[in-house]
Length: 256
Image (cartoon, rainbow, N blue to C red; front, top):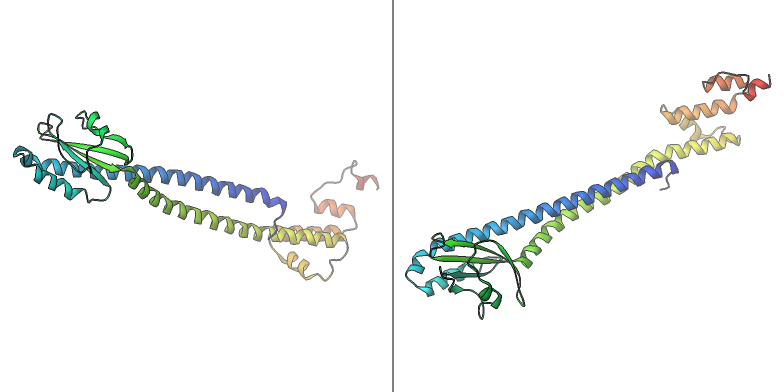
């Protein structure tokens, strides 16, 4: 479908607008989904850490470490939770889920802080670690590590669905815009062809010309005006039809 040059810039403008809307919406969706899912995982992990902390008070007081180990082993099955370890008030590791042992970065870098931290453990992966105190920290702390790789996959999956929808709308909108612009350009092309036939004296009995002349829009008005100009012999009639007042400086007036 060919378009007149008159409409090409408009069509390119529509493409640019669709692209701008698509990019802006995609960026907004990516940031929103990323922030929402990250907060959700962090909140859930903090809830798990608090649950373990509340349940382990009596166990720690009784120093029943086998029960404590069994307790945290139940929570490690939850998707997204990569490791759990519990320390006492002095920083001693009471139980953990690391195999075969606690990574050196955690063992040597432990400070007892309950702040959320990001960890990179060589050979294991990247993690976000949240903590919860046991009896306000008097009996120790529970630390839960979330796998950033799994969280990123979840975020990418959610974002991919959003981007797929936006891309589908963009592609569909482009084709619809081309089709609608083609519908708008066709009467102009027909009018141009009719004007060429009029100039060559080949418009008599033309079905396409009669269709144009029967239109009640701007294209019809122009077609009828072209027809009048082609048939008018008196320059004054042409000037009056075009809304131009004769003046001594006009070529038509000079000849009279």
